[in-house]
Image 1 (tube, rainbow, N blue to C red):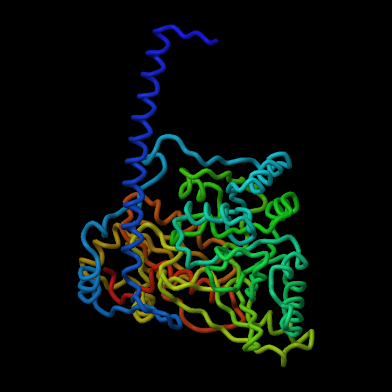
Image 2 (cartoon, helix red, strand yellow):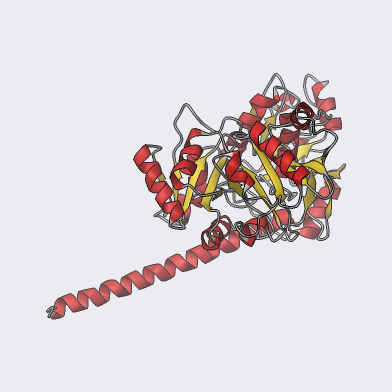
Length: 466
């Protein structure tokens, strides 16, 4: 029998009441923040027609008035609220997420968490991933909930080896499909290529595939990701470790900023080995019915790389190569992630400055700007590429060039870190990027850079700084 004094009972009841009140207050705060995030995501989504499902086509505005009218028709003032300075410390005082070192003991504990159905964020050579047990539907559900990710956007399963990948695809009735998947996986794994093919439904949960019947699989080359895969011995489902639609993370601090209130362990990468590629993997769908290999998302592996591989192995006449990069609404199920027009977006209104306008600016030693444009630039950050907007450097709030020499590899490696920096600049209200034109199928990172910046701006191209 346990005896309790009257005073301790009163104290205990008082403590319970305080805890209940605190929990209620936290629930209210989280609800408000969730609503705010929903409003912000809705603002971005309004730029996508409800039935849009076509090849990539940005929205171009030639005059400030047409853009302003469009935004006023589609968005209310509350949706236009600036949330660029939101951070975890202003939300709730104590974070649920923790950053852990990349020691063997820590990674072993992370593997145990994954096997138990919990979340672990880890670096890959592309971006940080938010990982869960890829064959456990309940664990996968936690990814969607933490990211506020629509179920129409599938997940990529990460595996240790090509052998582990091949069992996740259904190639039982198609020897040609099996040959191509075997060839591509053994030539490009581990590395920044994701292959999509018909899923082995006996192993792959439907929630991973967005109910499409196709599963995306890749083998990362980053040592930390590979160690987790080796220790856990399971496929790890892992999209980028950020809130859906926001800028992808390439540092543990980026993950913590977005997912600070989630129950997730974040593995801190060693200084010498970061997300070196800097943008998400190339996604290629291998379709046995149409006998095609289609690039669905640009990354570090180009269509030329795939072509040379197929030719080297005598498969160039078995499957045809093409590019099918698309934009779709968020309510349309896709076989590949990264298809929404609103993606990789800073929490600040962002625009692409048209090639016609920045060609004019490059020709002027002192850019010809009207008074309104000069006022807007004072609170705007310019993220440039190859010096195309350099004439705006002294006029803007802050300026950074991803690669002054126009090196796509350098620019890609800096892209997401720079977008995170841009939205955190004190006083920023707008971010401007240069429109990247031209087509070079063999410079896959230039195509990836163009894709990410266009989606970061929600496809909005302007001639006027507005």
